[in-house]
Image 1 (cartoon, rainbow, N blue to C red):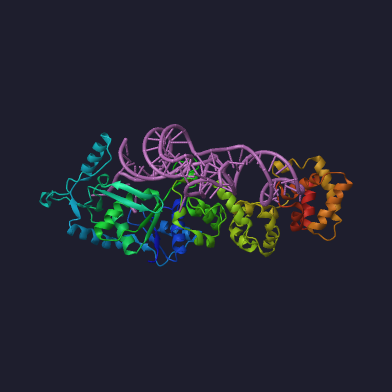
Image 2 (cartoon, rainbow, N blue to C red):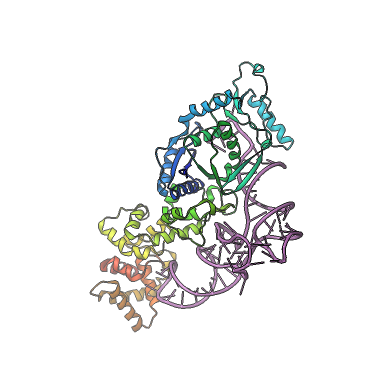
Length: 467
RNA sequence: GACCCCAUCGUCUAGAGGCCUAGGACGUCACCCUUUCACGGUGAAGACACGGGUUCGACUCCCGUUGGGGUCGCCA
């Protein structure tokens, strides 16, 4: 059995978007499952649109997701000469030819085809023409002499056998008039030279697969295995746009998603293993295969991502979670927590992480710790601070002042006792307490809040609220 | 428009002719837990797009219709 080689081949024209991330994940998982190799190739042949910044973003995005690649990334542009070499060989073998059509002529062909309701097909006017007819001063492109009869079939691991009639495919340009290779040629040559055995990529390349198959055959290369995975759609079923989540991975990092959650979400989008939902990366490597990749497009759903992210936040060990949350805490709380402050955060982290769907929410849960007195209650909290509540707070101050050993258990016991003697429900004491101490109606368990705030700060905040 | 692909609860999906009274997860609703919000627990509503075949028997196979998507560049 030959060693499996997969690759991810993005073009560096923007960020690593979510669809690309999933493609990379599938390739990575597939190669890791088979103990194979996963290569990275940057398709930077479009000099106009490719940027170094985008290359770095792709690297960072993959690293964030925890996807590592084998060896150095291949920069496609640097292999231009080799691509051209293959084209020239085809030319010499009569498998390709010079075409002297001007862009205007092509445009005309396109318009005519459109007007007649036909798809644009190059009509092959230079295919068998004598090179002596070449107009002077026109630099020709090189076109591939594609088979005109018969059919080309892709044995796709996801889509099954897909047959294209060769007459549907025209003679594509493999070398531009300036001598540079075009996409389909470059991809074929690179995938062959890199020894890629399995090409796993988006469904949008399915027609390219047919053209590329013809190229593989003409070049005398072995045709690799294909797996065209369905595209990811937006929540409305339409093409994934930015507002749907077609963002770069760094945007997801900023939104406070954990890489593990993202991996799990992306994995389940188009792939399944029975009823399994929470799947560790280790497990994914063990289970992943092309046979359970779905054939229909999936919609990107933030709600489910949030649920998964919440799960991973809850199950991340405190120390690890704190490290991940620190940048968010700095942003939300406006400070870099010192040692003592980190201790405070850690004290309520177990309670806070039960409540957060992302790292931003988690960080917000700590904001009350560092709020400066007097605390400004939000509108909802304000409602719990009416005159009756203030009176109760005054009583609670007296009660709490009597607590000698300031622990959550002791303050709770004191307040519970008070609720009984005063004949009020615990909630009527707890909510004003929460509002006065955190300025919010939602917080970690209130006696944990008292404990972490400490006696002095608690009493001071209560005094502020009592007016 | 031509070619190609797809079609199970709102969403992600299980399902390889009888195991399906169609399962799980998210979401929704109800109840329980409870100092808030969460978490957790229990339960409910909720789908095989439609029409023809094939078969003793179709969610599963075939054909068509409808709907959705992709591709039609000297971009990748």
